Amino acid sequence: MKKKKPTVKQIGEFTLSIYEKVRQLETVAIGNSQAFLQYLEMNGEIDKFNEYLKQKIAKSKEESLDEEKTKHKTGKKKPTKRSRTTKRSSKASS
Image (cartoon, rainbow, N blue to C red; front, side, top):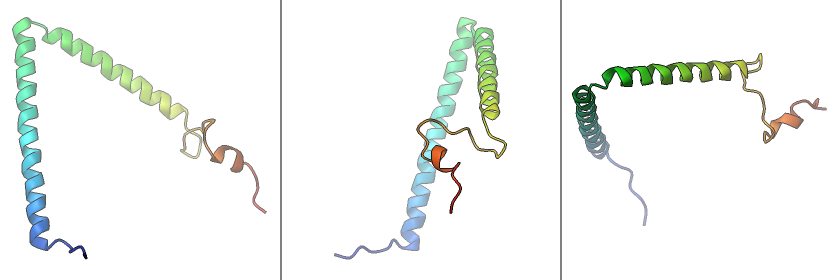
């Protein structure tokens, strides 16, 4: 049995249904975020949470700077032991 290609209408319906699901997920995520912030406010822990986030952001920035330092001058990361190109790339092709 030969598979049929989807029609433009079917692709449009599928795309629209995906869009609607994404919008539903966005609504749920916003609701969860608001509920979490209200919980923190109720317990008086907003300042503590903000400090935690600042620490995490600072740590993330440090890690990304460390990654930048490990790149070669060519812009590529240093090859690891498991890299297949580590040994071959230094050989001249004949």
